[in-house]
Length: 606
Image (cartoon, rainbow, N blue to C red; front, side, top):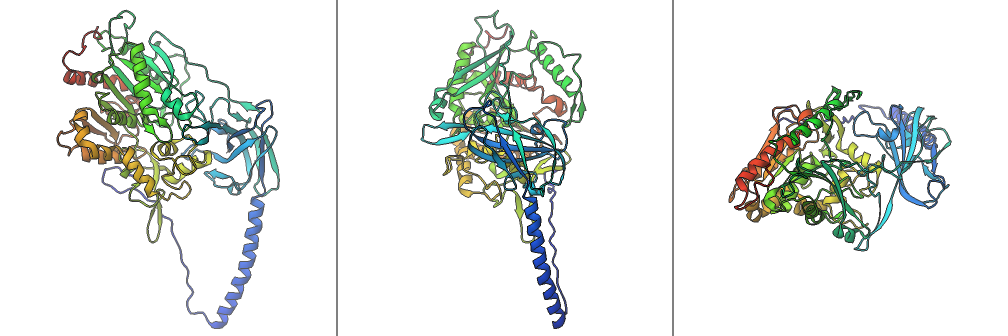
């Protein structure tokens, strides 16, 4: 991990040992050979016997006809925890506190029939049931139900549809699960533990509307045609103060990109709840962070309604899909034309309904992490539609630094290979460089949750968005999910279609004049996921641009973790709650510099 930009990352080294025998007489050699032969036979027998014992534990999981009268497809998950602080389904993560999960695909599982999970099921962090120590555990099972999609291109895919939860398998309405039960497990014992999926996750109610927050949902023709079934896009719209009192006003639009939003985030029209029990935030090591979040949301409401605040429309988009909680807001061979659907269907609908100015000089976008990548990609792929992007801690924007992997030159994503050792590549660190998981661990967790890019998680969605369609109709793997071996053909496809730095450099002659002054990128130099590495490479290109010079900004937060957004005055735990207050003044400066002659600069400034 890096404390300074040019220091070497820590490495975890696996030692290998060798043994040699020196000066053994012929007689002793015969004796040793005999002993080794005898020991070898005994050892194999013991190992075989031990393996058989370890493989004897099984789980038979079924669901009653009351939960579904039809056969079901999906990913069946067995969850095992050493505690009951939460249900096991809520305890699977990349970090050291994770509990255990095993997964198997089920196709046409009938009511009352059992799906078996045994030592052949792939698991995380322990790969097999054989590796579980005997003891008392809390055990739960869950079926992440798949829907069959008949796509316009003839593909038939089984995928987990989003049901309003933002593609979270452990909270998805309609998924079946069992109540956690404390059981003594011994993998060597020949027994079959029966589990009934007799619980169902209930529907999620629609969020309420208020004077300021409205919700829209439209059926996208572009996406419906692609998926062969009705597909909807949604958005939460924050109306400016005085919207009803000024019917003549037309407003600039800000798109706040990010993960799936249940409601418009960070806006609270009433003071914080004085009776809210304070929580402890593990990431920021703060007590009462939930109270801070409510206070900052209320502070934004007061800022939004203040007399000198510029009046904008701000939207957060709902574009969850069968692969993730959002689409990355671009067109994709696997997800469909989400970029066009958002920009040519949803945005015009919102601007018409809520009196947007509807012109490129009056649209802006910002966001962090996934939203940071989306903000920058949207500005690049739709350069005339937007007048500036502010991208914080963006997901990899140069695939020579796909976190810590160069997908064009490295052979293996999980390990640095050398003559005498294999060094695991890190997946997550803190600001001190302490590593809490490796790339292999993160990807194996996803593999346990879903095959064929169906985990609904981070590496799988990058693969679903960036990859071409594979031979089986699902996204083509950028690397073997089990071994980490990189596919150079898929990497080449990624470069041509989604490597943002490469695309800018390749097309700067035509893109440059349209993007001058519009690109602003921020990242902490100790980003937890090493996203600063790609930003360094992007900065190297941008600062050397000519005809025109990019005339934007790239900035780094000293020792700042994910997701630093450009504020040097506040700690990360606060600045991440102030995107709007941070960037609206910058947008106003951009409008002053770039609004065309005759632009409406008055109707929305009341």
